[in-house]
Length: 373
Image 1 (cartoon, rainbow, N blue to C red):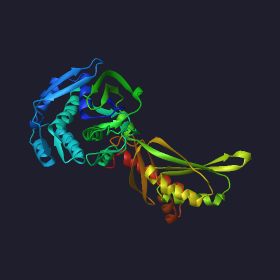
Image 2 (image 1 turned 45 degrees about the vertical axis):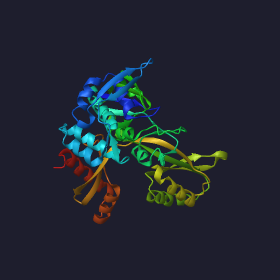
Image 3 (image 1 turned 120 degrees about the vertical axis):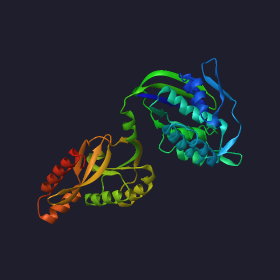
């Protein structure tokens, strides 16, 4: 699958991204023709190369004015663009207008130019490096980077800098949020072309191919925090209650590992996996319910199969079954009955729990093999 990777180490803007794409082989004339489909973005594009082969662009011929959301959305609806392109543009504009009340024709030219440039390359996916975030500062009574811009970068790896610059423009943030996936491992790309854009910020575009299932794996990847502590002086009867409290407080998983600590003492490592926003209340539980004096915290990535639940009928009553998919369009890779349901049915019917469990497996097998019909 053809893909584009934007190296945003120095910042990211729509103008720089378009210049980088043209440097990587996008035909500026084709982009100019595509922009002419839309009244507000009819313009001429002049391409210039610096001595170090960076691309700069000059735009002329468009009406120098700004548009409110209602007017520009009406123009998009009446533009005659392809439905897929119109949907992407509409989503892009919605995210831009979360940050700004008006959009200028110059911004529209660069924003739509990036879309048409990616279309010209035949890019199926767009990826981005970790994104730099400038140190907050005040300009014209407004604090930058704006909170609305940072909101669009949630879920993307960022690098905090001390530079008093936004580094990611509102239009750039809207493009990233609409089009791009985070990607840090360039060994996954077979590189074909590169381009360097130098407009508001320096941006490098790498064009190549990636494995078809890469985006699916990336979509299943998320950042979690792992909190661990080693305990050697607590009544072991307390651990089940501590684990219960942590799960109730929002932990994704909690587990125990036996260890031998200094001076040969037997101990337990308590590990808690969580999303970062839940960490504070989980640490409160750990400090309140255990004898530990400190907790180690680190950030990790985890890759999870997509999951779903179905209810199957067994001779002993309904049982919930968890399904696990690589892609939800495909058959599940595996499935497992929920043990609590099996235990409840076993108690109700006076049968061994493994009998109920096996019956649920058989019912789930029939359900998945017939696609639920």
